Length: 184
Image (cartoon, rainbow, N blue to C red; front, side):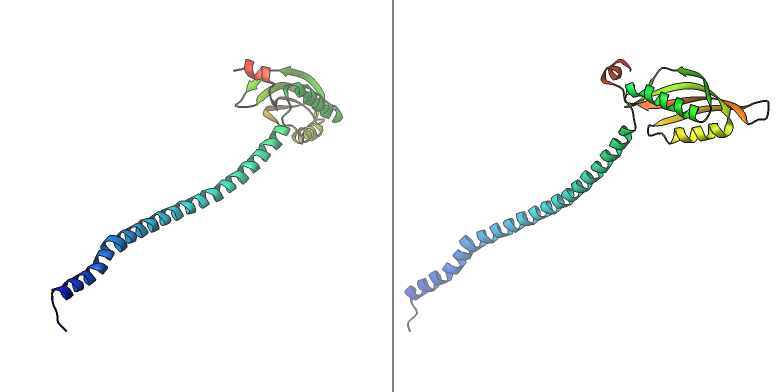
């Protein structure tokens, strides 16, 4: 076999084919493939973060619904401003049931808290201490939210168990829309 220029050119063309195909075809494709793999990994990380955020969102939704239910239960215990008189009547009935005499009831101006109003009532009650204690337990069991910030007890001078009590009974209520706008 004779090795001439023709064979040498054929050999160079034969060697140039894989080199040129690597350089013009495979190398750009490998670059595109590595870029696509990088994008896929980036999107998978984003999907994982989204999955974590979504699971937290459902947990937050569940927690928000529990909080909303608790708020609803508390708001059910708050009368509106028209029902405060009903609660005062209920307290008077509880005192009468325990043979206590309400000698004084003085309404103070309503106080506004962040969302609710508080109506303080100064009351003076006289009667038997055991009955007063039972009365206080009954007030505590009321379905509405009340509190007694001040309480002063005075024992009767004739040791028969009678006493006098002066206290402030605060009744919490939801203001009507007009009252909420008027009060600061």
